[in-house]
Image (cartoon, rainbow, N blue to C red; front, side):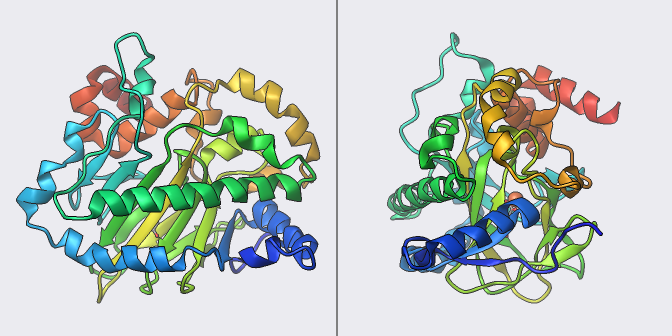
Length: 348
Ligand SMILES: O=C(O)CCC(=O)C(=O)O
Ligand SMILES: [Fe+2]
């Protein structure tokens, strides 16, 4: 029988920091990473910040449309800014959500001499709502630090030196504020996908529900809200580092029917210049340590991983492709030739 899961494991962050409980919790983490690909992380110390941020979201999204549109993503070749309801596509269907995308501040401006995909790392557009920039910066600083520690723990659970994955880390991570308005039953909040921006995702969801993860048997498993927790999943960058053994995990959100849902995903960035060949070489010693399972590949049931396709020169290009297809209006404006090429590849 395929080794799979029917619920999402809960890992207590304080147990990972306590020598009396660490070994046992690392075992649970290993299982969560290698068998499930999803976990709840509790007691991270970020509860107050997460709570304060959620409290602001309804007012932020209630800003007049004209104000939100001023920071529309269409103005950003880095795919940062506001996306109105219905402007995003996943698995070729329209998502029923509205969102603000932010990146780690302080990126070096792109110039014509840089590779085209380097343009993904650019400046933020902040909505005109007092305190937003400060809150975004505070959130990104705090969660970047947690993400870094988490990555060290993942290395430790493989008996690798804690800093093993550090040189895969990219300069820019991404943070989103997302709103899902109520919709007809079984509507697509966001369709089935694997996160493409980097290593791990750290998601805070409110108390509405609707997040589902796919297990190896192709069944959708609910990931119900767990107050104060972060839901962590594997992105395509970590999948690539582990030679596809730790498959990025497929998930989706069913739109709410009677109340608005808000969520705050944070995507830990990966180095954009990583090529598949470089990865194969440097990841070989990592892959050897990963427990062998006869059904390694079965988790990736239905959503292809762009980066493991030899079509793309490096992670940056694979990620750019994903952005262009998710936000076709932005893709068409800034990268018309790539937009045409990537769209054609889907049809073929
Ligand atoms: O809103 C959520 O709970 C999940 C969002 C998500 O999966 C994404 O934006 O990549
Ligand atoms: Fe996602």
